[in-house]
Image (cartoon, rainbow, N blue to C red):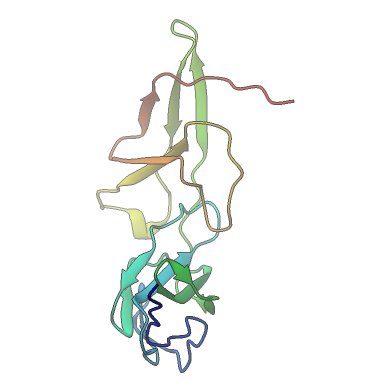
Length: 178
């Protein structure tokens, strides 16, 4: 029988984290490197209605988070990992500058001829900062009723990008729960 001891590394010892804000929509994070860890995972937690972002994984002791929405309170969790063991997150609260994005009025209409299709329509935002710009919209939906996690939708989420003010979702099913 052989027993092998790995080099020590404590995934819970994240320290000396600093944040720089070179522009309103990005944050640069730096932290003290922990010896003998495999890497670090960063998770940006945005408020509803923003979708959950995929985590950022890096082996470096720094990372840049981009495309942050304006005028929101958010959290960035950083945690070290080794051999699929993740440490407790070091959480950084952050408020981005600027005017928050406008909330769109969304109308959903069940199409009777199919019974499983929904037409979604909305009007473009009215603010001056949106005028004379080609806007891109994201539609996020989940395939089954799932509990929402902080910061957005869960793993069953699907996303696609569109440039128009109307789309059709095909094969929408009603699920009843007791």
